[in-house]
Image 1 (cartoon, rainbow, N blue to C red):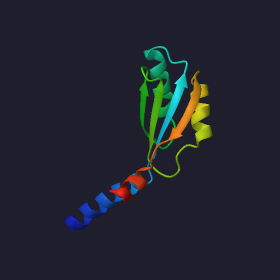
Image 2: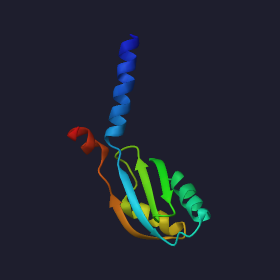
Image 3: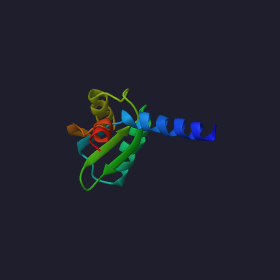
Image 4: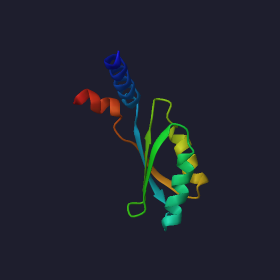
Length: 103
């Protein structure tokens, strides 16, 4: 019974990760650590965003999402604008399901 429970938990985590994707945004207007904090706080409130990384040096924002109901690129763009910055370029990096298939 314990083995079945452990296996089902592992499969559940793998299935959840199977639909995750990473979105990277070049952001214009970030000049200080307060800018970084503003973007992190704003995106931490967005549903289905599991991880937010902001690089002041690279002027980039990287989001990791948890499933296939991720925010649209338009929602990401609008959230950056609402934070007071300009999204220059938005890229959807490889989805994790693609990486799992190739391994």
